Structures are given as structure tokens and as C-alpha cells.
Image (cartoon, rainbow, N blue to C red; front, side, top):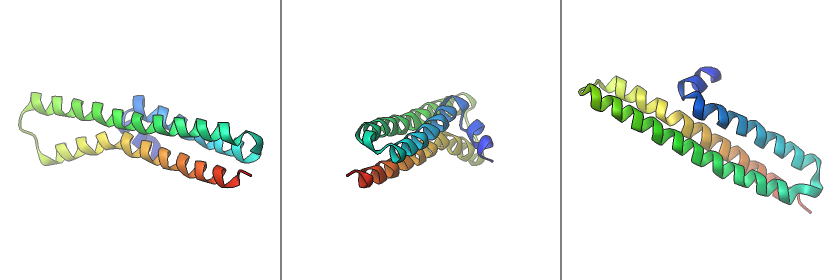
Length: 115
């Protein structure tokens, strides 16, 4: 199911978001285990989370441009085809926002754990 969505949303945008999600989780675990380097870890997670959010928006924008180019060349299309194209263009954005939220929750927890 998840792999289908990653392929459906475009591997060029979805695979890096997945890698970044795993990186954020690893950095969070590192921050919990090694408490003396929390401020650097928090800054890194913060920067990565903003990057992944913008990467998701970029994926959506490029997907929409491609969809609108296809619509323009075909002419009249059905609402089902349009809805399917819009759904696919939103996948990188939603996955990027999900990763952003996970990173931000991690930042909040690491900040609370600081002494």
C-alpha cells in the first residue's frame, strides 16, 4: 500500500521524502540517547523539516504543471481523470507535510528533554 503510493506520487519526489523521514527518526533517537548534543540535533531536524516541506510543495507544483500540460494538449477531459491527476499531485505534498509534522513533534520532545 505505502509502496504503491510512493510510486503513484512519483519516485523522484516521494523517495527523498521517505529517506528524510527515516533520517528525522534516526536524528530524534540520537537526540534522545545523546542528550549533550540536543541543540545541534534540534537545529538540524528543524532545517531538514523545512526542506522536506518545500520539497513536497515543489513536487505538487511540478505535478500540477504536468497535469495541466496534459489537459491542455488533450482538450476536454472527464472529471474522473482530473480528480485522479489532482490526487496524484497532492501525494508528495501530503507526505512532505506528514514528515514535517513528525519532525516538529520530535523537536518539541527534544526541547522538553533539554536541561
